[in-house]
Image (tube, rainbow, N blue to C red; front, side, top):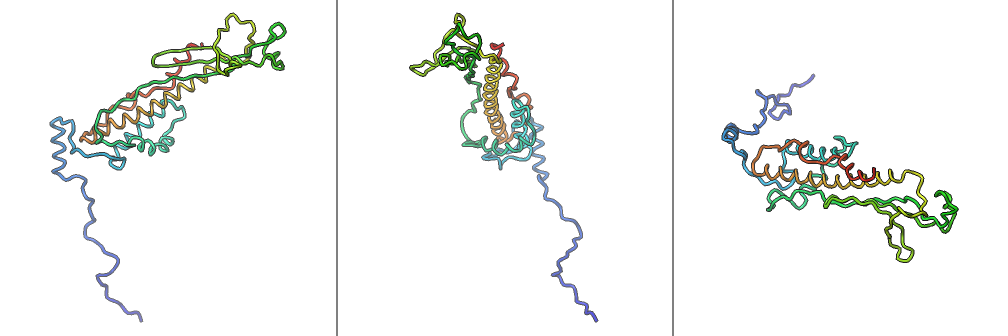
Length: 259
């Protein structure tokens, strides 16, 4: 027959009379101190704490950084999504704290938009037999019609400038040489819409510069907030829609000169 064994205190099952309680995040005295500071209108109601890496940010602060990065990407990327932002957030935080922490002395210089871009397409050829060749396809087999005419569009935002020039490659120096096509009778233009191709190329390059500017601006916006959080601020700053990220449509002004 079975033998009953006495239960010992080493039993793996222990039934407590009351469930364990989670440790409170803040005791009453700490809450009172916080509320008193808020009541007094303190700009920095929390105790100052250095923020040296993303590990020092709380969940709310990390979410704000996520929102900044998402707004930055959405400004120029029509396919931006929360998933794409998730793939980039760790790299963004690394960039924010790259050789920087809230303790670093000095002002935070804001990123300024400053760029110059060029776009170039082949717009035609110099025809060696203008009396015989009426269109570009007539020049295809002619060795005397081998010099391409390039159209080069340049846009600079500081100082503001747009320039369109036509050039050929000099046979001796192999350097581009600008010329005026107005009075030339020996140019056979590309029949496709080379102007549209030039517009699209220039616009793409301007958008890339705007996106780069936005990324620097996002880092600056995050650092500005982190400096305040380290001082004891509870503020999450302005809404990301007001942080100055440039939309991709702003690049359209660069191509106005191309019709």
